[in-house]
Length: 237
Ligand SMILES: Nc1ncnc2c1ncn2[C@@H]1O[C@H](COP(=O)(O)OP(=O)(O)O)[C@@H](O)[C@H]1O
Ligand SMILES: [Mg+2]
Image 1 (cartoon, rainbow, N blue to C red):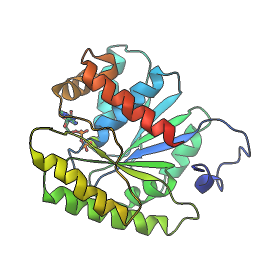
Image 2: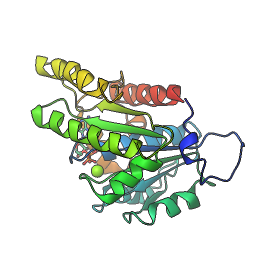
Image 3: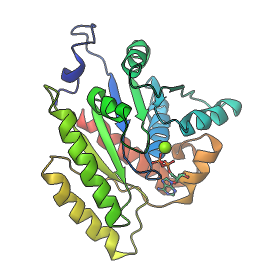
């Protein structure tokens, strides 16, 4: 899968082969885990030795604040977070960052805005976090898929995109059937769901409050989920 093809126009580093990935976390709904996935994958990849930064494109600046706590606590590795909410300036910001980082994660706003379309255009890989909790999540998913299709029609090479189930609870059978329905909804748009399920675990909230990722916390199950998600993402490239 050539994830680089779609931005070759403005990357002038020619054929130099090194890992450079813009990975975005998108949903038009709040509270589904966009910031959680951005923060946790950033910490995971940074711990694995990649040069990682996050672009926080949400005006609420939640990930900027998370990084403020991380800095105050002097946690290592350092994960720089840049705030950028201007759709006209985001490409310029990323151009400035790509020489210094291997992986740029974009944490998106919780509604459809001009910057959301830009993010879909410039990403190499898109994750759509979704909670398997109700019909409204499926409506939002359909809306996202429509927008995704619109933006991809403007590009030569399609950006691979995947749903990520977050806040999963194995007890209600509804969560299992939700995944089946989502699979059908995504099929038409060629947007599959990643295998890793991120379960509902309080440690995600704790890590968020402490400026950490769950891979730095003691909850082995949460840590394994994020490691598996990171591996699934890396295996795609
Ligand atoms: N898997 C999870 N288990 C428990 N709490 C979670 C989980 N994922 C996210 N949260 C919590 O839910 C809230 C919303 O998540 P967040 O990532 O900020 O959503 P978004 O960025 O999509 O608005 C946060 O307080 C976060 O800590
Ligand atoms: Mg957020």
